[in-house]
Image (cartoon, rainbow, N blue to C red; front, side, top):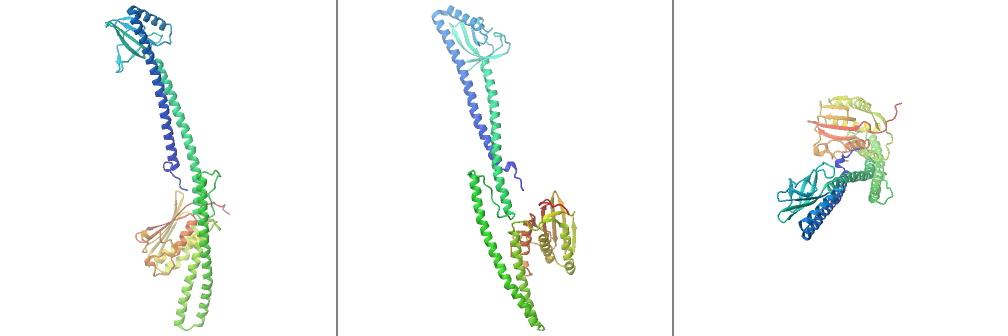
Length: 469
């Protein structure tokens, strides 16, 4: 059975697309949640700073500079009593000397954003920590003499970013893992249903025309596909069975009168004994009758092989013994034609096969090689095993077969132009092809330069192996 590469599998590609789309959609959602959370928290911080700055501005307008200093002092004192309070206050003079505030000096490294906000680093020990953290603030100029800075530390926001980022990372990872599991389950489901269809199709191609695709009764698309395919197979089987029945009936019906005709011609042969001219004519009629009977027998044989539903007569067969028997059978004919036969067979193997059918198929191939190889020509038969595959090659140095004709010569009654003047019905290779197909063997033709190279190959473990007696 051919294994499809995962990267070529439609189920794999669907799973991959499903995972990518699922991961992308979840990433967009989680990214929006992250962005919304950070923006919302940042906006709250900025609104709190704006509100505090507005309060201080109002106090300054009503109570002047002394009132502002008093309020700032109260704010700093209250902030120092609340370790979790991250408010930042600083009032400096024209030379930026600290007057009131909870940070030691005006920020030396400050990034003035285009929207008027300042982002800077703090590393003082207001809350007992010496770690550096980011703060955000707004500034306000008083009487062109004093500079007021009001802000908040962004440590909580940084912690929130880290917390939310970590949660989103693990959430996305978990989502992708669940998506992968779901995708693999979907791939397995699709693969199992398609595998069942493919296995049934292979058995049907091997000759089991009664095989049907099993349905699960779920009523889904696969059940509908299986039902339609089964209906189609029923019609095909019915049509092929009808053709086979008609062919068998025609062959049988014609064989009987042909046999009677041959018997009467043989009787006539005795009656005209002594008349050379009439004997020659009768012999020609007998030869034609024998050819017709052989053609009908071959047609019936091919039909039985192609439409057989069971491998009746199959057992463990020693392939080398078949080839040696064929060699012994054709040795006299090869010597008569002055040809040379070179046989090199590898280690003997056993295949699950019908011995008579293989004998006839291999004999047909060797008979063709003898027929088309010229006198003193060379015919070679070789077999070997490699990587679990058994190979048989039959080579000759005759006229060969053009590459364009390789697929046609196994069709019934097809004959090459140079073969039409030689005896035969064009069924020999069709019979070989039918026998090898039912045995799961592959037949190939190649150019022997000159001549024809016929290759037969099959997996060594091509069927159940029976114990030796």
